[in-house]
Image 1 (tube, rainbow, N blue to C red):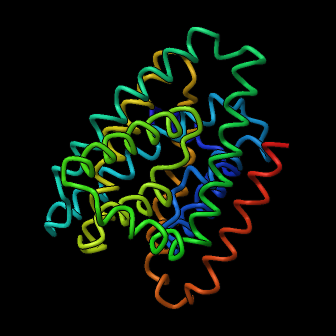
Image 2: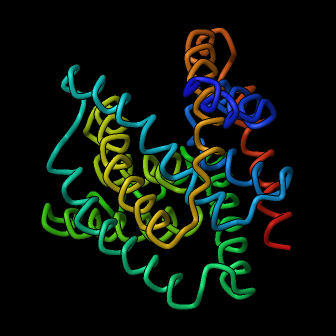
Image 3: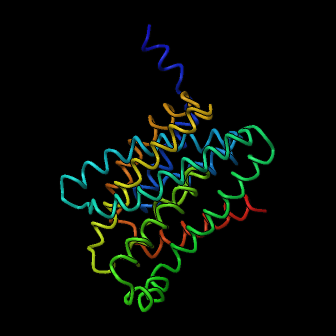
Length: 265
């Protein structure tokens, strides 16, 4: 009887969307929030706050697994994770308190979430297209920074990500990795990615819990997304090496730019 009630929660359309987004994330490595949240808002008409809050818990659950794998492979720089979290967690809490103060159902809050989501998607698209140019442009400036200054900039990056992720669920993936590559050019890329994923766990869980407390989580939606996305991520990861990056990266960046422009305008 309980299993039947559980199955009743699953919406096949949401699960199919979760599968498609999961497969794309497996192919490209771009964070699910960049794809799932605008899909829920634009295609299914989900309230922006509910879409963001549900996606944050979804991301937290899935990234726990990724963080565990990177941890076993010694591919996480924990001091960097702590620096990021010391900026992102307080910033996320402050952003959520601000949203709660103005009311999650108000027109102003709805507009703020939608606009922030749009700009975050545009920023992600720019990051994907111009990553190498950004890295080269920042190298001369960052090479002259002291270790203490780099640590301060890492905390500041965490704060920016905390605000972006808590309001829009976007930013912890492509943006975070690109800036970390600028700040720590000598760190192996696998440790950059592992550290970014490990940092995303406390950030998305704290931000997701905050949305839960202010009532912007749809549990049936969350279950439906997980049912589809977990096999989708596995399938996309399996075939990722067979699709050229020079094809996927511009395609994904163009898609995010179109969606971001649609939300902003």
